[in-house]
Image 1 (cartoon, helix red, strand yellow):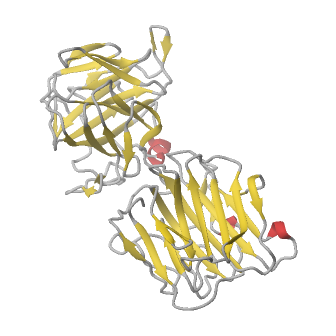
Image 2 (cartoon, rainbow, N blue to C red):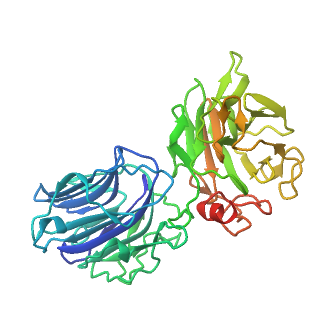
Image 3 (cartoon, rainbow, N blue to C red):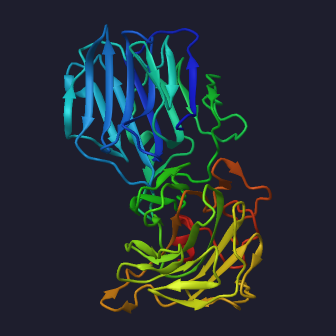
Length: 460
């Protein structure tokens, strides 16, 4: 969402006493408060659900400028890789105050709150009745703002009906993961809607049958990352330096010239073959460094620049990593380097990485041409790598290789782990992996796969 949001002004009806809101979301760029939804008259009657920077979920309902229901979770939900499912069930007609508002996270009822005020009996929920409704934006007491960034999937609102989380999700029998029911058996009521974002050209389309369509503001993009198949992203909780993450944690901006700004992806693998791309979008410096590669998590990849702005070392603090430099022919690893015949890559180039864990090989491509006379499909020309659980010095690897990148000087790079975008720019000629998953700019080598939960479960 971020500067993108959805809005709808109801054509009639009243604010309900009984309702259910269900939504899947994935954290992007965190802010002081990230509004998942809000609704109200822009004055004294409003409701919102927000995700706070500390990871708590905060629901508030306000009537006549007075808070008549507050629910703030005790737990912090800060996983930047996984999807969260939140359900709010309302029924203010119930005699027991604690039963009038129920929150579920990933199928489990929340029973511990850091702050909790129960709804007064028969009060209204100012969300989706005769008021304006926002997804990804706040409307509150005459003010509006837009903060935070997240992905959303399968948003349901049932007007006049109270459902448990099990109406919208279920536990996968094989993986044990909570997953969405694609076509839940629920009744939506007059103002109800179902936003499943199935149409990239019309993301606000209501699939409930009510025709309660939303209007998109901003440049929203349809992602292939879903609760049923999660693609890796850069991890804002595991990085070095003051990097700024955006576009669903697929873009990294590194500012300044002191030390490296480094980031590691959220997913790793200990077997299989994987492919991803990244694009050097821009840089404000003449002598910059963009160093993509792999690391055995959870190490932090770090480098050293001498007084002449020459890369002298690039390694993890103790363990192992393999990093290609944009302006040298070396492959840097574990404090040393080895020759790897390649062209230098510059602003605008798309870098390809192919990782063959099964045969301990790593490949680099630039704009569709594999370097070092490499051919990942046939297994020739790749750089030899050690096992991710090997011992280097006093450190034993974690057992998993993860994508990583290092930046030095002001630079912006965007990864495409299979979602089909570099930042907000779609790939021009979408290519899928050998399983038909993902959208990449260049052909994926035969037998290689996007780094996502479905492929790791099948091939990893």
